[in-house]
Image (cartoon, rainbow, N blue to C red; front, side, top):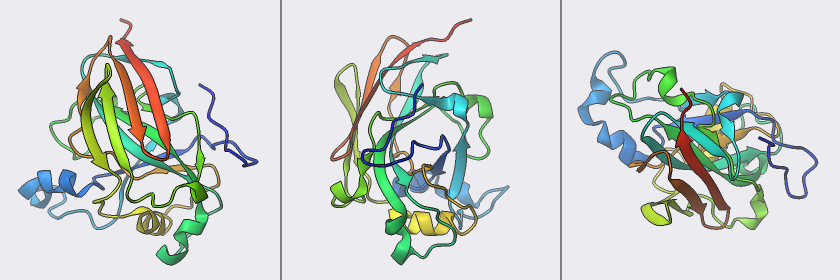
Length: 222
């Protein structure tokens, strides 16, 4: 795939995508008492993150191979515009260059604790939208409507709101232990209740004010 270019920005995306996990309040709430069980015995106190390796990245219109039904997570991608290292939440938004649509695919999980890599880190399982929308064109990125459509049928509607950490706080907390570089993408995290789709189906993810991301699912080669 070719990574999308910034609109009115001199750099392309770096290719580093960091996904925030368990950042949607309903998702953490759905775990119930399991968050108090071994091995962690408490809810997470810091952001739970996963770095998406390059082989996971896909683009607009790509055909993504799947071994069966997969969850289609919809996430807002936060594109970093300047180096963020231990920034305060009050200053975090000045480090945002723009936003794009991100798909977070994965095989259904029985547990969120240390999932097997083969369930998430598969070729093409992190498609990126074709355009980066400059941050100044999005009035309130913490209150955008998201939709997942499969074969044209809407299967999920959610928002970028109701997050444990909104955009500014997420950047602040992540940059406390990871230096974010220009062109990096930090996702706000997929919404809880991701719908399923399978080979032969067409998927579209929509985020109001940011754009759409469309791709198809095909049967994984033997």
